[in-house]
Length: 487
Image 1 (cartoon, one colour):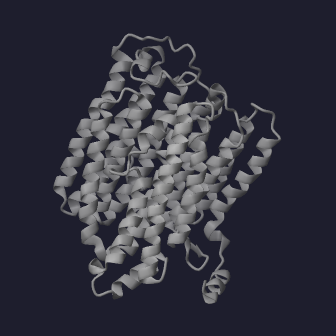
Image 2 (tube, rainbow, N blue to C red):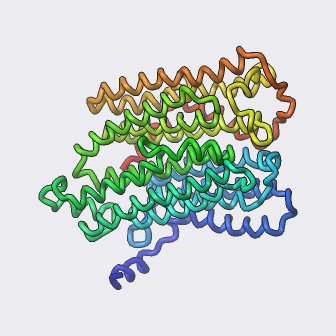
Image 3 (cartoon, rainbow, N blue to C red):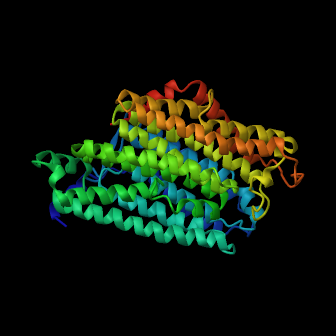
């Protein structure tokens, strides 16, 4: 490595730029030690300390709003964009931990290292969001991924959890290879891994679209990111991993890490690859339609609710990709608002499933939820609100999120893409409404007597409900924040 680069990095060290993730890492390591010396089965204090760590990290992160911090020779920038996405990841982690404590006890895995792993995953996600160098983004991705591999296979005595962990590991490593090879090719062409540096170099190229090595590098890089956001045709890992992983981790993977992947994807694509904008828009148009359609139509035939929500997650990645096709501030900020809303409505839905699930969760099927609306009316109403939001029905936040994304596409002239998005939303009504029909119009096979409303999971559901309704009724201020966070 060039000695001048090393000296520049040393001189430009600014720990404020990585302070939020540092706080999480310190808490994570401390809580690992706490869990070691805690009696087996007594992990509630570790869970609440983890939530406290995330609250502190949230305050530290918000201090950088309109006060950007750059460090390490510009490879990390905690700007409004990074702050917005970091807060999504922090919220997702906190809601996940709240629903996890009683769940782990029920499943027979009250192990303390579960919570520090979520903190490390969140720290990696925040590095991805704030990374302005491809290697920084890669390091954040690896911290995030390694922790998630362990969490996906956390139930080591369950075959499907082991399968989820192994599939995610092998396919994740495969996709990381694509991303890293793309970084290598782009570095070979431009001589830099800095996001802004790549953009500056490409401007000097006579015709970026004729440079085969650059296009190959960009294609491999985008492929790696598309795998992480579960966009078709790189979505094949999602259903099995989401179904086999512990339910709170499934909820977390669908929100926090996905938001981090979108953050890195957006920063690299919008800043570094603007010179091939026309070609990228065509690719993203096709991918958005394919992802929405594949996710929604395969979800129609699912009877396992977790697997259905996995395909739903794929479809929602397609809706978010519409904002990339728009290639304007409305579309980009629409993606950010959409991911914020999706965090609340999807984690909220999974939190209800955590409450109603039996040990082993064999009852999380459509038939298993029959009559739940009558036997547990409050949980039935909560799940219905989350499902209405996932459909995009007013006055929930899901409607506002889709409205802004589609508005960005219409503003850019992609009216047909917005129409396809609306049609896909109509298709999704079937499988979301099917859950409600089972809850209210089928005779119950169970009395749901095992369901207990524990405090932590209830708090997670209440926070998610409040956010879904607030963001639906008053989306303006949050959308304005997203607009301020766009580059």
